[in-house]
Length: 247
Image 1 (tube, one colour):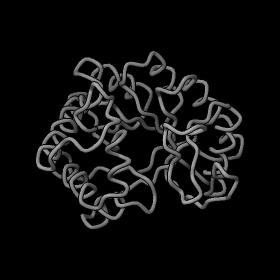
Image 2 (cartoon, one colour):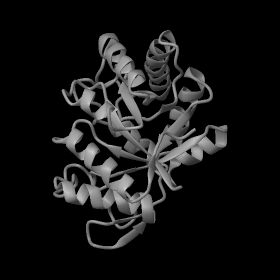
Image 3 (cartoon, helix red, strand yellow):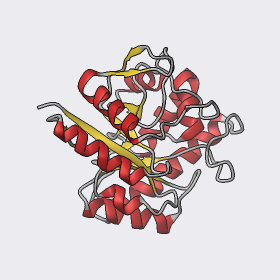
Image 4 (cartoon, one colour):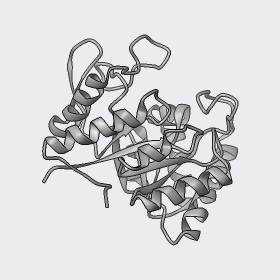
């Protein structure tokens, strides 16, 4: 049977987290860089375990003011240290609950920057190994993050987004540009089916773009995220596609 993971970025202060955790198969929990604190991590981990959802860390540039969406203001050595601290802070909480961290997915600008910057991707991969060896690193297919994971023997999960528009070269449309985020539920569902079944998306200019993904993301801070997650899961299951975390 064809299967795919549905993930969501959580622990960022959104009221929809509890509803989303009833639908997704894995989650990425903010661990202090752009959002989140001990209390939010404890609450989200508890709810994830109760729902049988695989738990990942969602570290970022140390940029709470900019929600982790700003680039280029942290030295590499300092960045590696803060990423290790963020990942370990969540991993320790997960361990206290008798579970294990499943993956690490960078957030925001760190995710986007590391996709294209080999040196930065190496910093991220090394931080993951230092903080919690054996977990998956999550990022786009055919990116510098994937290459960095391969160089270090890190298992990798290729990710695509059901609620973001793509360019013809397979990159995401920048958030500042019109049409970057899908607002239509039908568009989100159609993209999810295309990714899971056909390993492709339709770019913003109408081209078919090959995109093979192990996991698809519904952004937890997108308006209507819980409704979108439910619709995506229902549509995929109607297509005979099993929803489950990898591993």
